[in-house]
Length: 334
Image (cartoon, rainbow, N blue to C red; front, side, top):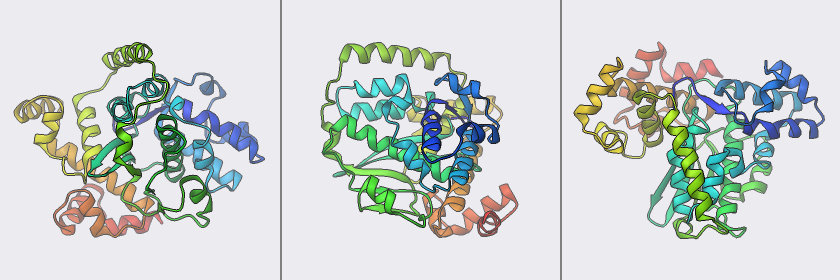
């Protein structure tokens, strides 16, 4: 995940039909967002993550539909992820499918990270935006979690249901569309946007999986990885963004994730003009901005979620980077 963030065009395509269904002219919204119609001709085209957010935010404002992200997500699923999505659908079991998704998600989306957590009898599939200022972030979260919901249904079968759906966004004026989509157990103002479900589903065999097709798709994915222009700094950002608040956002754990020593990690980051602590501080600040802007979580809780031992340490670090305390920064965004 690079600090600017990009995303494939494919998830945007259903938005055009949703806007039309809601009685608005998608071409006018496209123009207002500064998008060329030619961008929509290639689902695998790449656009800035903030451009996606601007497009979605304008669509929500012009249609007056505050849950437009849900409607767009309902048109999507694993197929929204291109080759990666098809490979996920042909993994041998749900655990392998989700690990594949996590490992290669940056091919599709470099503005956010996906993580899979297993804690005893409960598992969670989460989506976390890692860019500090993204318009339409609430709609993006709604759409991403809805796509994840549909993907889990496709992998597990129609009987799958989440135990709880959490959304790192403020409670909307009308939560009924969210309950209709996810069930009654929906939590807003959450620390993460995630689907919580029984971990037993991870051992479920994926229906109609084709091992030979998966092998061919994996080869395409690995070839794309080998030609990707990403630095170690980008890779470290991605790992940290997915592990902050989950007990593994430290130099030793990150070095293990790359199969290298902490000394080698330090040396290679230094060659790029940065350090582990600099990257960690940057990712902490970016995620803090998202939580402060999109949720009503208390500042002390935000500090804990970012692995600060004390809220005062979080406040000092945040103010040093942005010139304002977390409380003042949040107030200015409102």
